[in-house]
Image 1 (cartoon, rainbow, N blue to C red):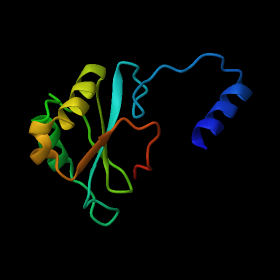
Image 2: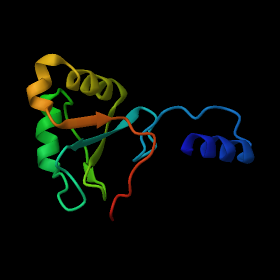
Image 3: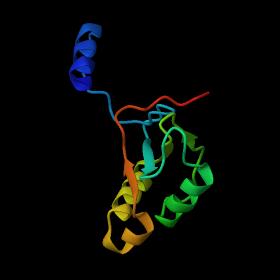
Image 4: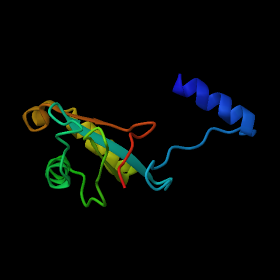
Length: 116
């Protein structure tokens, strides 16, 4: 439904080209936004930036910028395109399974609300 609504809005606005991927946090075209959550996070039990930092650095993210916590308890942050791809690949590798057990990562197309 969201994709159809987005396509309709693009058509109405006269947009004729596909918008290239970019950060959902800063709109920087060289960055990608990653969303991380685990099985126990929720609105009442949100992730903390230090726990996210520790895990994603272990997965090879390198230096991280700001980590924002969404209203649903998940975390979002930006990485360069290549580091984001590497993080998602590393998270899916068998030898990392014990480290990432219960954790989930994605490059979202939209974001949950981030409290100000």
